[in-house]
Image (cartoon, rainbow, N blue to C red):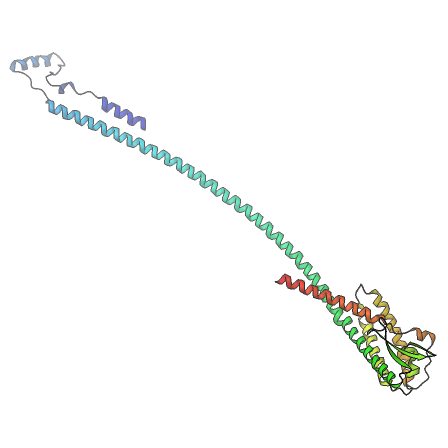
Amino acid sequence: MKARILLLVAILCTAPVSAQTVVGEEPRVANDSSSSVNKNAKTAGSIQPLLTATQIANLQNENEKIRFDLIASTNRLVNLEGAIAKSSERADSASIRSSWFAFFTVFFSVVFGLVGQYLLIRHQRSLNREQEKAKVSNAYIEWQLKQLSVLYGPLRALLGQSIAIYRQMNMVLIAADDKKFRLELKPGADADGFEFQIFLAGSWERFRTVEHLPVVYKKGYGVEPYFDDVVKAGAAIAEMIRQNAGYVRQEDKTLVTVMGTYLAHYGVLCRLHELAVKGEEVKPTSADIKASFPHAIHELVDQGFDAINTQVMEWKNFRSVQVS
């Protein structure tokens, strides 16, 4: 297109002025007849020119103006073509950039989506593991709370009641005969750090309910109600052990053995007590005497109770920190 425009301008700019428009130049004859006519015309007088000098100058000016207008138009067309080309290039570049932008947008969207999904799945798995751990922990704590409420707590209270009643009976005997009975401070003896003693055969020895029941029961000391209460407390302890021994901690294997010893002690004490209540003669055998009260049961139950209570409190504090 540009080449055709330039060619048109060159043709218009280089076109010669017609010879007929030159001042004083006669027209050329085409043939003999026209020459004859011209000769005849000369005879008639001189020939006047077709265009005057002013008209020729005006035509030349118009020609120049037209040439300049064509050149200007050509330049504008060239500039317009260049602008169109640049616009096309910019459009192509913008299209390419848009395509790359769309590509990277989709690419990074997919990548971030996959990464986000992975992190979400990982977080969910972590939460599931934590929930499973929490379930196990909660189940274990519930079991420990049941151990406290079903076995260790009630058994501890019953043992405390038993020794309290036993001490009341001790005070009654001491009040009745302080020469024969006494309460001595002896760490490690009973749960409260004291030991009740009886004076027999010229020496003080530890008082034992199974062995010394015939010495004090219905012998004028007035301890029968207290002794009966001690036996009743023993019955409650024995029932508690029989029903709930399965709640003993795994760490307290020794306690299970001591519980068995207590059941044996209570069985002998209950049998001898029934004989004494009936007023029959009570003669403990050597086997009966060996079935004495297992004083270690107090310490073992206290240890188990304190251990469970400590673990429950630690778990409670840990959960409080997690929630906060």
